Amino acid sequence: MTPEEQQKELQPTGLGNAPQPEDKPPQPLCVGFTNKNPSPTSETVQDVVGGPVEMIKLADGRQMLVNEEARLQDPLPPVNRAATRYAGREILGHVVILEGSARWT
Image (cartoon, one colour):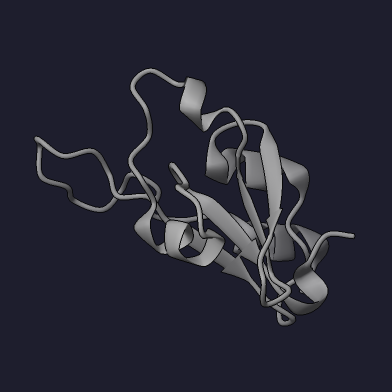
C-alpha cells in the first residue's frame, strides 16, 4: 500500500453524512487508531476534532485527542458521552483515541 493510500484510508468518513433528525445536531464520534494503523497526522486529527488538539492521557494508557477550544465555540458542540466516560470529565465534540503504536510520543 502506498503512503497516499494509507493516508486516504486514515481519513475519517461519515462525519456529518449520517442521517440525523432535523432538530438534533450530529452525534459526536470517537475515531480510534490502533497498532494496525500508523499514527494519524496532526492535520488529520485537527480535521476530525474541528480545531486545535489537546491530548488527554487515559488511565488505561490510551491517548484521547480533543478540540482544546470546544468550550469557546458558539454553539457548543454536543457532549460526547462515550468520551466523557473514558476521560472522567465532560468532553465536547468528536475525539480521536490512540492506542499501542499509534500513540503520539
